[in-house]
Length: 172
Picture 1 (cartoon, helix red, strand yellow):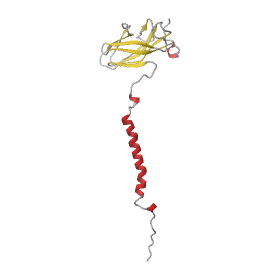
Picture 2: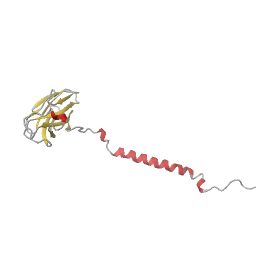
Picture 3: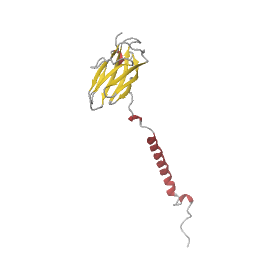
Picture 4: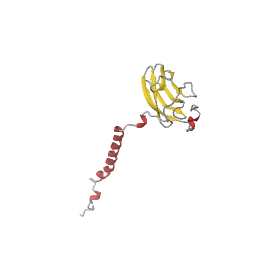
């Protein structure tokens, strides 16, 4: 009796089908492993603190100084400091902000867990008698704390060109 079965071509070989179906899965698994490795070796930048505004950000012990900058009309004219000082510690801190090489101009108390805004329109102000740098330059400030020590920083000097600072610039 003749066989009703026909010869099986290599395309229909049942032993080859699983290998063909598993190839895309192997490629996908390799791709997932490769991409997962990228996040393991590269820092996640959204978890890093950074200065999101015009001024600088720095830390001094349990204190964080954010958006620190100086406003003035021109080199040699009076200026004012803008900043936000946050105390993440468990005790109140006394902060002094002054030009580098001079004694601090104003002592500010930052209570534990609180933030103090330094600005001419806030409770804490730090006025500079004469700014050494012109707008667009950098001014040296010394930040001092009774719990965090002292740090010299270079902060941007801006004028009233930007609308948000126009009413805060001291008159010459």
